[in-house]
Image (cartoon, rainbow, N blue to C red; front, side, top):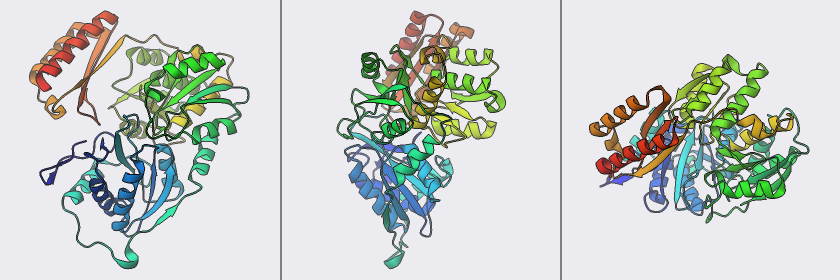
Length: 450
């Protein structure tokens, strides 16, 4: 996050809202100001805002600040409690609220936290709305409401009930007899995910299931799959799912404990829908991070792959433009456009489980439909990721590497949307070649930008 600077303010919003280390750069003062400004922009004249959070230890502190800011603007607050991010998007629509807000840093470490907003349609904010919020933080209004015009709060005790009913309604059949392991990352999925799978009829084993904000994402969840793989093999499960802290993404492992990343989940579901004539326009949306093997496998089956920038908000925008009903990211954000407006880990896991339950083949066979190109991704911490765009010497090296790889590889160098990191990704037909090229470019990034 880029925070307050010398009494002024630089750009706050990143790829997925406002993030930073809680109580250091993402302070209660900043979050209160953010809430007040967001209330003015998103829910004027007493409009209602749904607020939810993950289990993070700093969540209650920042929730209090955000709610105070929203009420100070005159907005009414509907408290959904601990609930997955897509649950807030759904509840915003379900309650006909003017906006939704989530307090979470997704897959980030325990000290981090963040605030992200949804509009009344359950979609991530347009840049214009973010810019207006930032403008009001920099120049706060003086005509704040008083008396009965100040916003109030109400607890939504039914929020999880309705969200779980919603994701279950997307299933065509029950999961009776299916054995699944769920890694809940000590996060927002701790209640909703096992509840949804058990109500669908699955035999569920849970790991990392306590709502412990001091351990959220620590050696568990979608960024650490080894524990899930081990447990799937130990209990003889048909498959396993690992969520991130706010459950807007999910990764899986098959019956042999092999990883099933977002590319494989999307490929499996795209082929399933395509074969049944349900993949509208025979198109899916992915991002620049999608593996070349994934793209070519779908194209060979008559499925077009459209490319969006990294971030499920950009995937959603491309889906809306193209009419696609399926899209997502390698990292596990998957959007089923007929059922959700944003990445939804629980809904995605249920859909994958539904295909597995209705097939004679295991998830290993269903999902491993392409041979991925060797891909090396290196993260380089830098002093200023904004300087990347003007680093001409680095871009010259990138272009030279691209020329060397030709049609059998590709290079992607981009700034992280949430951290002071530049990501260097290289794909090549040969793993050693991909590693050499990625390390050389990462060294250049470090030399020029660190």
